[in-house]
Amino acid sequence: TVTRDMNPELSVNGVNGIAWLPGNVLAYSISGLFGDPGIYVFNCIKGHAKILVGKGEYFQLLGASSGKDATLYFFYSGDVARRHGGAIYKVKVDGSGLAKTNR
Image (cartoon, rainbow, N blue to C red; front, side, top):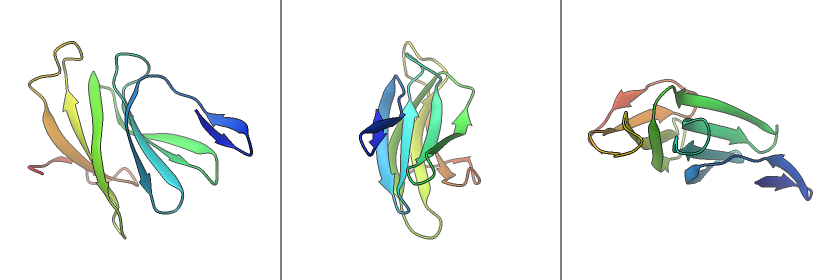
């Protein structure tokens, strides 16, 4: 749960990775075991969350790069129970540039 002035702003289940980004943005992943799987960003100033990548089984945020083109790196697998056979992907914080990566 993320709070602002002691009031809940965002509450989600199944979060398995987080990263703080410049501009008071929280990036997080939801695994798919509990909740809606995907890679999300939450703007702490505006109090607004949006999904960048979804419609899958298992996501795990691995890290982020900051700067002009802030990029999120995450693991994705189509099998939530086994979590194997997946790959590492990247996506920019604005939702563009989704691609597999060797990082």
